[in-house]
Length: 79
Length: 79
Image 1 (tube, each protein chain N blue to C red):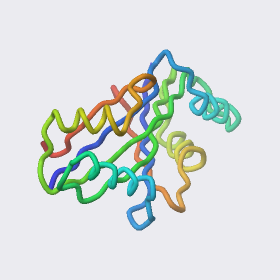
Image 2 (cartoon, rainbow over the protein chains, first blue to last red):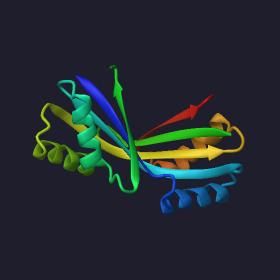
Image 3 (cartoon, rainbow over the protein chains, first blue to last red):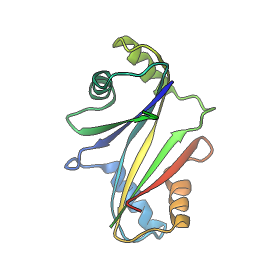
């Protein structure tokens, strides 16, 4: 068994309205000193066998992330 | 400056239709051996000052996660 985590975040230069909404909400509950908030997606994939680095790149870039506006990173747990 | 990452995932016992959709799509692009896929949210919060553990718990449980159906974990980077 292997577990792969793929984190997909909006590119730094892309407007992130969801992150901005959270940022404003933090202010409303009295949290100060926050300079930026970004919201993305997190995928946890459990597999019976290890997937190759190429397979993981293909999964992330073709299926999980829109590489025009998002970056991704891949973490193989227990590797 | 500090960076806090909050990962919010559906509880294990909760149906995850988004994760299931990704799971089916993986099969369609020929990826085999995947036993489970779960999709959640990832928040990256940059702050000028360190936030206390209590503040982070409150932010995560009140604002970022619906603790009825979601679990969260908090990672303070560079701590």
